[in-house]
Length: 396
Image (tube, rainbow, N blue to C red; front, side, top):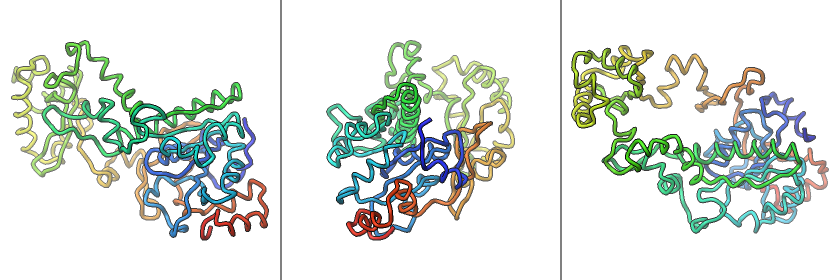
């Protein structure tokens, strides 16, 4: 394992986990890059975030939850001496995360060639929407744009409705941050075998397309294409959300025949042959869906939960994050925690031998600047020079 001077300090802080001993340098940004860093920090990696100087040096950021478990270092990368400091930081790092537009890191003097020359085993993670090459790489975009072109947004939408997916989750997180995390860990494992680092090009358009493989495997069964109007998973009356009497929503998804039969029985429809044979009668799907909509509007969400939750009917109430915190299953697993007045979802997945550390407070911007630089062996005089040059921002 690569020697890491920050390991002892990180372990002393109580931040342990399956990735303890992994050091990652993250260039602060928005969206999936910081989320990826948070995921790795949750699992025990020492993630050092390089943040821009700002008037609110001592205050949490708007994306504060994604800063939890990390150490925050403030550097002005446009000031003399800042790039050299970063290159010192990556000398014993396992990986780097950056989410700039293609070419920005190169112009700063921190592109892959320079960083890999300084640390040949570094895994250089690049998080973008469009990727590092292709005609759209310099175009601005967000989650919905990437997943629209990949095909994921189409498949996330019910027939006849406006295409819409949960904000950030499909592209930024599922297709972006999680794929970058897997790529970084794969790259680190490879580098520990042969000492060779590499660039990980994690593009949200790539990841969101890759997520479709399970669904597009059904193309042959649907006549060779997902044509508009043809039945898909989102066109089935037994696979959708329904509104209840109180205006709240529930969702059912009994895809397998035995689970569907359980739902029909509990709804009292077991003697209605239209419903009994409903899954194999496409011409009735619209009608049966309308009748189920009327049925579910007859009771409140709480009443339906009392009847269906915990059974094989594949039922769940649709809860807000705040409501979810009180659900018995969520409580039993300790999924949500409130720290310093802010709601956090706990680290995932879970490990039997090396559990992640308990969540702590989000560090203020720049809280670890002097600590991290001291680990590089920079003395008080050098720190003062950097401070005078404005590299460390107005204060740290």
